[in-house]
Image (cartoon, rainbow, N blue to C red; front, side, top):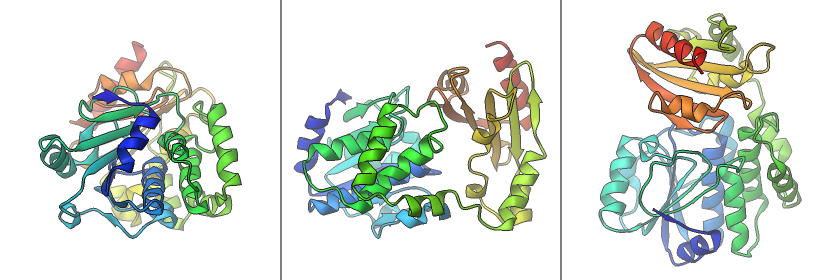
Length: 326
């Protein structure tokens, strides 16, 4: 892995003709906002690009969608000459199929790969990287990169980049809301970022069935005063009964940390039999990236997660035991 500056990445990208853009599965506003911003920018400078994600675009982010988005590797062209990996620190998070594709088609064939990210504990050891863990979003880093090209940034690109900031800072409520998050937001608004469009989609509450799902999830609330933890669980049956999807339970972990006495929010979602996805949020209480890493996961200091295989009661016991010993 070569640590590159933005000027070096600019020169590398300028030489390319067909670029693949990849972000993590279960994509959020930063992953897709960054991907679609980069796609639109490369298109504006006559570089063909294609966006891949293992999962479909969540409904609340559909306003950002582009034509060349796919969940199918077989639909990608054979003559790609660069892959840019956004908002992930481990190729596993691109999904098993894409991880194998990158290894076979890029790493083994010595093709170029670029990593642009703001997560800690990077596990990708190939290609060129620009990682800034102080950035509030990957989109902010991308904004810096795009400005290196000294070309026009369209309102469409600005809207995509603005989405990354609003979603990753939870509208500037999270502790990653630093000076750059505000200065970048100001610049993007001047460039024509459509705040009304973003707010209408990101913060719309949706259908009543979403409310029913969230009521079921909040009914599982466990509060541990010693660990200063608030924890909720969602089983498969919750989604089936309410005819909802995982996107309808976005933000549960983050919502818990705004209550008195809760410093850590945890949301546990069943993804298969005895397999669970855990999302963790805090505001500078502990380093969650270290905590998640102890379970084989990772992320940021204030926003991390991991996958756990085993019984839910064992998982909760392990989380409580480790937090009480922090």
